[in-house]
Image (tube, rainbow, N blue to C red):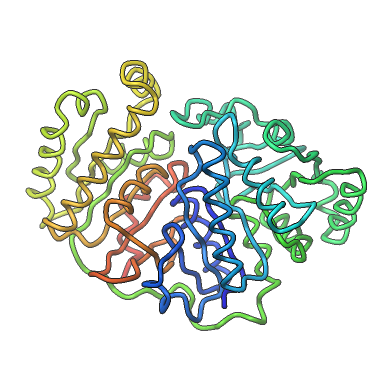
Length: 423
């Protein structure tokens, strides 16, 4: 039975968390939604399971319903601790869904206290005095203020969380964290006595996450980005199944990069990659007018070059171009038409052109691709960059190698160096 049961609010976030768990020696499987019995054999002899939902931008009541269903499935597997994973940029819709899902999980587990910890210093996500910094600047100056679906205009996590949850929100300050895990546990006790139900945790370095993980080891529920998993690892060290947690089978075949992310990091990666590989850009407005022509052109470019090189097919665009498409098509429609195209292209690449290794950038894009390919589960392997592992599909059918990258993650050369780390 798995020791740790995790619920992630998007697919790339799930692989991010699963990668961190593998890095601390936990054999980890990621499922796409609540798995059916076809994955039963793949869920034996594992230490952690991450249920990947696509709930970040859903209506709050739908996100709650899906998250509770995932929780019940994890409880039935015998998990001892539960982890609600969201992005290290803490983004969700204005109505949620981090707060409402946290409230619902607390109720279902009958707990009155939990933590909120999006910090991931390895990717320059830090929290100080309750303020979230991304890339060394406040979150609302990092580019996240321009996110097409979940713009973040306030870096104060206590204020953001307070607007979403019915629980009182408090803070474990940096000075307390640096005094060690016992001081943090004492702070938890004080906050509980004051009626606080959710404590935001300061953390600016890896050692802070280790301190916080030790302090949280006895909490039934934690909510966090992927970083807190690194600190929780010590709790499970003596109970792990053992062996090389990151080992994957070799998956030879043609290689493609698909991207719908418009984050600054991904835009820089695409510019770097365009200098190395053949590339084609999908455009939301053109798709709305000539959908089949754009899809056909992208596949024609892939067909021409795949025997000689990886191919990049992307819909990534500047904030101004994204806003123009949203104004003309609507926010939801602009995103949906890009996701539909990337999913259709992925299906044709795999089923018609023999692609077996895919790198996908962006949470929504990754969701569209794994849905189109009917992926049920993923075995987690070695990391390309912090928070982005290679994975291999589980279940029936020919196996694929997938790397699902959060838009904000990865170095500038991520898309070209990724192939070197996959067997």
